[in-house]
Image 1: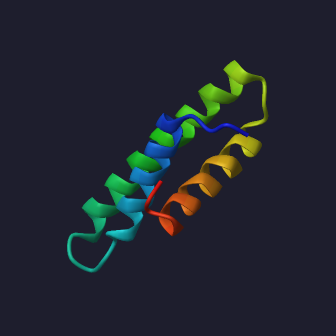
Image 2: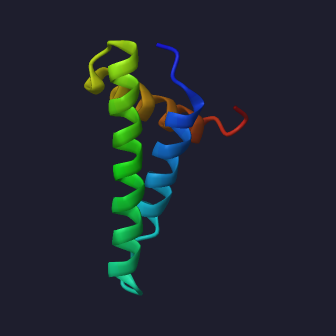
Length: 75
């Protein structure tokens, strides 16, 4: 499945926020992560409506694309 770059970017931003969670300023960091995750989920849902594909399929493809990009930073 061809995954739109904007969905990958939103998911990557959510994962980066999640990775920052630690004891210092945890609540603020958690809110930032939750906002980023909601933005990614909303974009996935919108894409699902437009494409006619199930949101779960798109979400899986987006997460896979983010993981692959992390494993191969040359992309």
